[in-house]
Amino acid sequence: MSAFERGPAAAKTRPVAVEPLAAAEPWLRLWRALAIDLPLVWAMEVSRFASRHHQELLNHWLKLAGCPDFNAFAAEQSRFASVEATALEGELAALTKEARTVIAAAA
Image 1 (cartoon, rainbow, N blue to C red):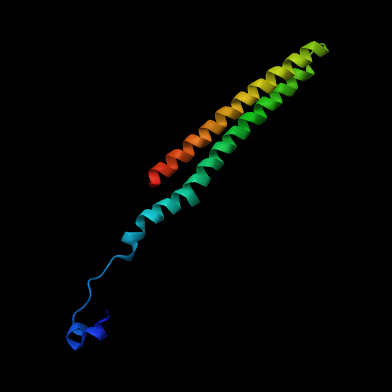
Image 2: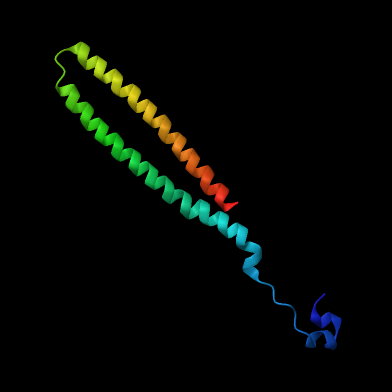
């Protein structure tokens, strides 16, 4: 019911001010976590992983260039594939952990 419907006496009293952002504060924290914090953290983690990966790839190419025969070449290629698969699993675990941390901090 509005002040007009309650009559002239009700119109003279001022309504209590309600902080509009107080009700939205949990949603703002969640928005910040998902729209700002999480992408920045993931960008940092992916950049760190990419730099490590490229360094390892360069070292791998140097080792391949020095292989004396095909067996050594195949062994080095196999070693590199297993190391990179393990590194990728670790990176995915780190990204998952960071996402959970950011979302938990927002909640």
